[in-house]
Length: 316
Image 1 (cartoon, rainbow, N blue to C red):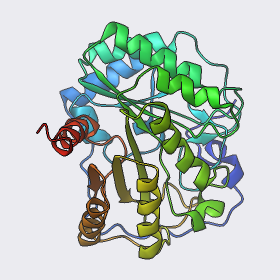
Image 2: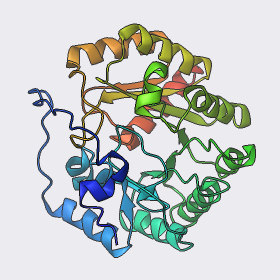
Image 3: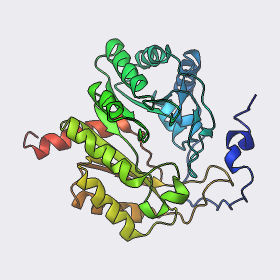
Image 4: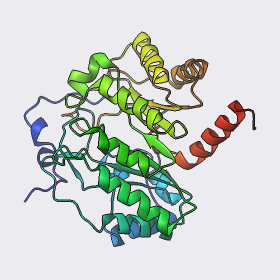
């Protein structure tokens, strides 16, 4: 039996790699240790409903802040991923069968937490014919049934090995925001995301808009992995060509010595510059800072995103 708390068993494909030095974090990357009643209540609800969160599995630095506010990004379809991205701390291997009762448990937790906005994400499930698309759709419908006023954001895999109907099924379930992360610049894909394809991910975002032009689309990248500024600007142009509404940018932080090394820590002033550049290219919403993550402040960001569209249409 694997113990996913042991790095060598969590990432067996990385166990024999040489260690990459983990540089000391600069002063602008500091987070408080999780504590408080609200944090404890969120933790209890997650455990009672046997739920997995990307906050824990991906070692998100904002977990303490978000859980203390009753926010959490739910991760469906298990805690083992079929891919082995070099930046990610989620366990790699052969996942277990899908849990048919999981969508109902997710919906119950959303109701108990009284969430105004929820983020649903997942591991990659290349072992499934539809990549888990039906499970995403069932989860969306279950939340709608129990908490009709909650807005729903999905952060999906790329459905790389699936028929077109997989993506169509998720979009047909009508999430309020469809998020799929680009992660990095195309030059770094072979080393950072070897199981993914840059232009396929762009096409996923473009197809969502073709299926439902009114649906908000969102994507994110990490910086500090060796990318050049010109490459980041080109990625922004590619995203806008796919009509992406919302861009998130955050600092890559190395989960273990076996993962991709941090090339550099990007200063907050550089993030501000990236933010200005992105807005100049036409994004409705941009979140860019060292600690920005896809699901961080997602509810507040969605409210701003909706207001930005109304303003653009002349209703604000």
